[in-house]
Image (tube, rainbow, N blue to C red; front, side, top):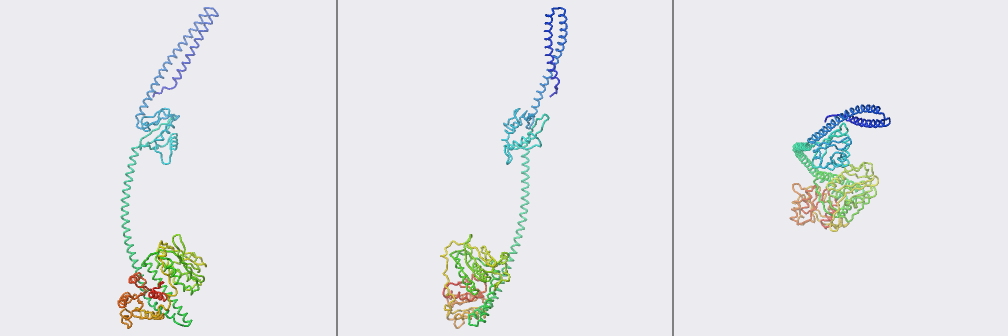
Length: 624
């Protein structure tokens, strides 16, 4: 658009004012001349005045004519300038319409001056008429924007107006329908703003496609790497598993060998120990002076200690090797508590301690034999470290079932030592006034059995006041009345009249065992016949009459006590039989049970042996 400038417009206005002024002056002069001629009445004066006025009028008219011509020229120039400006505006609008980007021009007051077709296509029904405030445009367009997460329409309007008033770097906006625009704005010299809206949807889609191709390529690479690593790791794990299985097999072999070694050593050690125990027990039942009786009592105590140590060592080896099977069953808790309490009643009495029992009608589910072993270890420990007061065996409700255990009034255990006492050969420190300290394996065995059965072990102790050791057992839904066995009848188990005159056939390949057992059983009034094998027993002069009971050792050189019993039963019929052995393995126990015989472990305790024989002969319950 040509620049015609401001001065021509200002000159035209001045000439117009001058023209108007001259017209007023001409009118005034004519009026004055007419008034003067009327007043003076002189013709010459009127002539002079008219001549002067005519000159002035001529001069003014010439100036006016010049001014009018100049005014016409200026008007023509202004008209041409306006035509050129209109043409320029038209050309500008046409040029803006041809641009493939949306364009909007706003004036210094932030009102729309012009918006091209592309802008209207992008924004749809958005107001874009000249004169529309930009803030109204932003408010109307907010509904088309995909707002960022957590941003409201009001937040968007505030952001958009702030960027419009202080233009900076371009920013990107996502529209509903998947359209993306890049908005760029610049300030003009007159204070207005030009906004450029560029459709970058294709670029965004291409970028997303490129990124997708890269997430896919990366995923493929990662999968290949992962598969390779998985294959490598699998190979490593397979190798590790092979090595672990080999190590485990080796460890199992070592444990099994250790268990067999302990079993063999235990058997070899318990055989002479059993003989010594039988001789000492038989001697203790004879009349003797008090000093001699005291010596025999000490000898029996020492033999009991050796017996406990060997039995505990074998138990530890078997538990570590996992060869002790668990046989959970539902049973009345009293059926286990009462025999255990009876068994330790005399021991407590000898130590001048009270042994009390609380056995209510509670049915639990666990392995009754292993539970009895746990309780025997706990009671033995409690009696060993209790000097005065007593021991209570019982149970009480627990949130997870029933808590069964042993309370004592012993020396107690410090909190710092309550974890250490479960270690092998860990005993309370010396200095207490307790005697007869054990080997330190009882609580270790208790912990191993509790873990094997899956029962929680509970320990509470206060130094100087006493301790509690127990386990939490699950309660069974079966009624106690259906499971309760007949209670034992005191006085019948050990009455001498029950065994006096009864005959017993002993089978053992150890002569000193035969001799010791003969002395012990003979002391009870029984008639004893001893032999080292079934064949020797059948060759005896008394072999014609069947005995009341057969007691045979399990290991008989190249044969077993089960084979010997089978041979003797073919001659004598179904005579009740007891198998005595120092082999504590589950296999031997299963074989004896399958044959229908009773099992007695060596070294034989006289009280248990007498109770078992009484049970075999009279069906009085045997408290093992």
